[in-house]
Image (cartoon, rainbow, N blue to C red; front, side, top):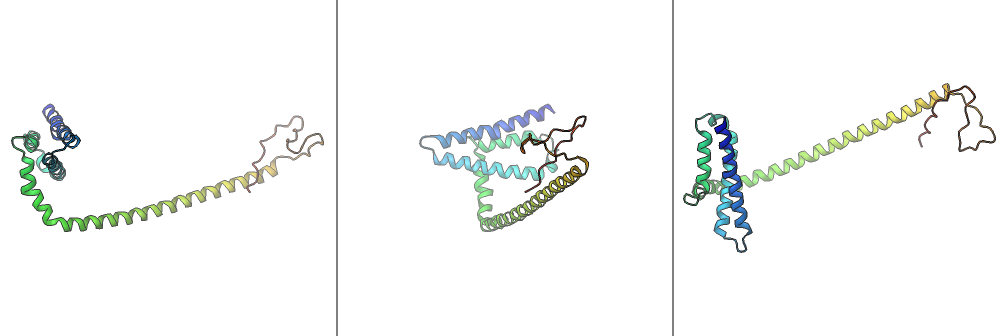
Length: 189
């Protein structure tokens, strides 16, 4: 348990943080070394592929003894200056495979983008229609409640004529001993 936790920490530091820092230094130099940039781009492509493959096959290989330690050694092999395993793996496996299937990959990505855009628009229109329906229903409910409370107010609240001394903008005072109900809301426009 503790060994696995430590190994995961080392993988994060040595597989992601250290290479990211080295890549940052390569990019931010006054005159970046193209070979260094190429190496770090190849490293990140390799790590992306390894991460995807690991997620797909993790259930089949993670139970192997020393799996985490072997993964750590592989990551160090990828970027270590003496081995530079990234260059070997990239040029031997990844670059030829992607180059051979590049047209198909691009076609599939374009089709996926188109389908994703269509699906987004479909869900967007459905969501807008749903919201519009619910807002309309809410407004209908508010109007019906307003009308029903106004009709109840007409039946339950006695109306007294306002004395001549009270202006039309002020409500008439209630008769003595009567507790008035709140006034009904104004009618909708």
